[in-house]
Image (tube, rainbow, N blue to C red; front, side, top):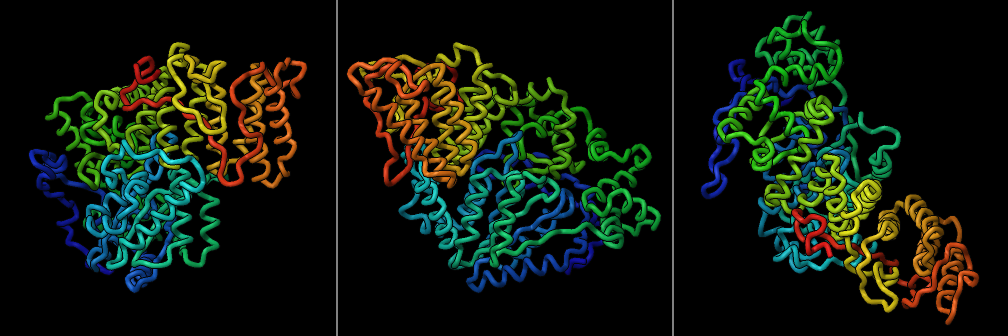
Length: 633
C-alpha cells in the first residue's frame, strides 16, 4: 500500500477541473472540454512499496551530487506509468524538476532522439536560465536535439556526416544535463524504450556510461513483454546490466490481495471475494486488465466479454457514441499523441461536434489530454493498439492519407522537429508511392543532419523498397543536390559539370553504405555494397565501382574479417584503368568496370583521418514539396 491515505469512496470518480488559457486568445483544449469525469483509475496506489523506496533512495543520492540511473521494466499494463507518476509527484514535492520524454511510435518508425528532445523542451520551460547557461556557446550543435536553442535552426550548418560529429553531440548533451542539474535535482524520465529509435538507444547508453556529476536521476521504462529475441533493445539492456551504476527494476504482477485492494479503490467499496477471485483469474494480476474487468463487471457487461485481449480492450470503446469511436480510430492511427489542430483537420468535424466527441472519449477514460495541453493520447497504449488493429486496410490507408494531406497543407500542425519524419511515415502508410518516395528521401536527409544514421539507413532502405513502384516521372524529378569529396559526382557530364541526369538507385546505395558504417550496421552495409557492385556489372562505371570496393575494404577492416587489401587493390586497378589515355573494356581489371570516363578520379585508399563521405540528393525545403516542383531540380 502506498504511504498516502486512502481516499473516501465518494472521491473515487475524480474530476479534472477546467484549466486556464495557455496563451493570448488561445484556449487550452482541455479547458474546452469542461469538467470531465474519469473512471477506472484507482485513487489508491496499491503495492510497489519496495520499488518506490528504491526510486526515492536514488533521488536522495542524486540530491547529494551523485547521478543515478534506473531502468524500470514490466509487461504492458503492469503499472509502470502509475509508479512513475507517484515517484515524480514525490520528487516535485521535494523540489526536484521533472523532465518527461516518451519514445514515439509512428507505425514501425521511431523519431530520432524524440524522448530527449521532449524532455529537454520540458527542462527549458522549467529552468530556462539554467539551460541557456549550460548550452552557452554550443547552441547550434545542440539544436539538433532542441531546435529552439538556435536563433535560426533552418540556417544551421548540416555538419560533416561522420562519427566525430555524433560523438560530439553525445558529449555536449551529457555536459548539458550535468550543468543544468548542478544546483537542484533533475529527474529525467524516458518512457517506452521498447519503441526507441537506435539513435536514442545509443545516446542513452552514452549518458549512463559517462555521467559522473550533477544532481541527476535518469529513469527509463520499457515494456518487457515486447522484447522478443531479436528486439534491438535487448543488447542495450544486457550492456547496461554490466554497469554497476545502473539499477534495474522489474515490476511483477499484483497478488490476489493487491488485486482486491485495487478493485476496492476503483469501485469505492469492498468487492465480493468471489468477484475478486474471478477478476484475478482472468487478469493474472495485470493492473490494467484488473481495471478493465472491474469496470466491465460493475457496468453489468461481464457476461458479454470474451477471454481474448482485443475484445477486452475494445468493449468500452464500442460503448462510446459513434462520433467518439470515430475520433478514437483517428487518434489510434495518428501516433502516440495527436495534436488538437491536426486532429481537427483530419476529422473534418465542426468544432463543437469534435469537442463533444472528445468529451465522451475522455469521460470514458479512453483518451487523455496530452501533458502539454496541445493534443490527445490514449490512456493506455494497449487500447490504442487494439483500436488500430481493428481498422480495415482501406480505412487505415485513408486515415494516413488525410494526416499527410493535412500536414502538407499546414506544416505548423506538428512540432518542427517531428514534421519531416511524420510526413514520411504518413505517406508511406497511405501506400502512395508517388508522394512517399520524395518524403522518405527528405526524412533521410533530416536524419543525417541530426547524426541519426541508423534512422537514415532505415529510411534509405524504405526508399529502395519504394523505388521500383514509384512512377517514372517522380523518379525523373529527383535530382542530386551535392557531391561528397570522394564519391564520383552523380549526374555529371564528361566535363564534370552538373548534368540533367536524375538521382539513381545506385546513389541511394552509396548513401546507405556510409549510413550503415556510421551507425555500426556493418553487415547491412556490406550487403548494400555487394548489391551495388552487382548492379555495376550491368551498368559499368569504374569510378563508382572503385568507390564501392573501397567501402567494402573499410567495412571488412572494421569487422576484423581481414585487412581489406584485396578490396582496395580492386579499387586502385579500376582507377588506374580509367586514367589510361585510351582505355577499352578489354583493359579494365574486372567485369565490374565500365566505360572510360574523364571525370577526375578519387583517391583509391581511405584518408588517414576521417571516414569517406557520400552524396546527398535534393531535399524539399518544406514538407509541402512535391515531385516536379522547382526545388526538385
